[in-house]
Image (cartoon, rainbow, N blue to C red; front, top):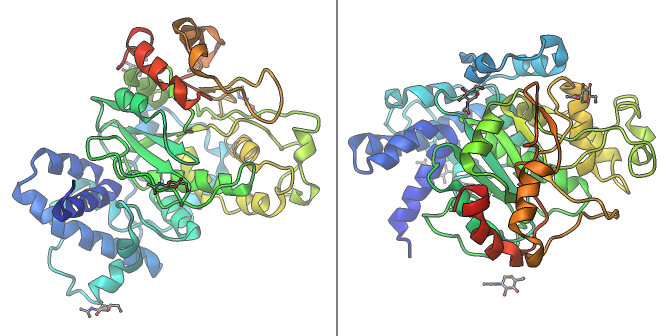
Length: 429
Ligand SMILES: *[C@@H]1O[C@H](CO)[C@@H](O)[C@H](O)[C@H]1NC(C)=O
Ligand SMILES: *[C@@H]1O[C@H](CO)[C@@H](O)[C@H](O)[C@H]1NC(C)=O
Ligand SMILES: *[C@@H]1O[C@H](CO)[C@@H](O)[C@H](O)[C@H]1NC(C)=O
Ligand SMILES: *[C@@H]1O[C@H](CO)[C@@H](O)[C@H](O)[C@H]1NC(C)=O
């Protein structure tokens, strides 16, 4: 039901979304303004130049805006992650990005007389863009994201919701209700099986054209971590994304959007579970070959369902030290997705990690998979308990009973119950 022209406009708008989110808001508000026409010419060109600059590796240093988030939330002492700081300093900056955020109209709108073939320059990225996302190798994507990570857009920070799914998103109708009315404060990224053949949900949906170029993921293998980093990297390319939360198809939100948003945006910690566990399913999975870079004393375990801020996320996509070690040695019976981030963050950012996850799961029955909840188990009392009864924890130095913002694993048949109870118990829908 979408015309070709609309498709082009959408792609254009997504391209904008990657580079200049503030502009797309303006563009969507005034669809026929001359500024939009200018943008439609200027943005692909600027992207082409940016990509060309990146691809030939001749990026020039640019002004790094001092982070407004870091002003709000003082950083831990620099000593906490010297390697991360060093890495950021070495990385050349993308020339166009900060200008793009702040002063778009100053871009040239001719087709690049300044040398080269525009088609070639934009080349790889523009041609292969699926839904407006760059489609480049993981290695290039991580480098690009690592360079962009220190940039933060002015204005309201966004929370990036990263959906790592095997196939479709049965809970999408609940998430639609959750996101409703909060455009501009969130962004959505979906990684699914590349064979997924479902149709796009349409323009009104929060999931419209939000599937990133994906690769096959095998349970318990390094491909799971690769998909997580792929999601993070795409989300980092949008400068206004300040917090990043990983979710699955069986996740549900437990609170309304404003609660989740302020909890995360205002947090002084990142929510990654990280603990030392003696025994077969903890230290037993450590491989000696990972030493001396990763020692058994540094080895941590934790849930893969992370939440992190831009600085930590930037460190994750920039990691070319620990990740190769995990990819090489964390193979049989190792479950990299349960150890890579908990270990990396406890080495790099020990003072930033809350050592808990904001996703509730039930492991109480033991075994390799957490409990799955069906329709009849979803009751208002159960939801109230999940919201404030399941635990007490620390939040920004105080004690709270709001420890879990999300929960899993809920079977698709529980959707109608969630839709029914959400207005009364969770305050949305
Ligand atoms: C630009 O380069 C591409 C790829 O090499 C080529 O197909 C195209 O014809 C060139 N366009 C112009 C205007 O030279
Ligand atoms: C999509 O793929 C699934 C599994 O391969 C198949 O059962 C289904 O018929 C396909 N649907 C469409 C619309 O092609
Ligand atoms: C963060 O917390 C402060 C005070 O604790 C509050 O005034 C502010 O509105 C909060 N910000 C957000 C985005 O919720
Ligand atoms: C989390 O664990 C690390 C050790 O891995 C520790 O240094 C840090 O203090 C812990 N953080 C909190 C908030 O307990």
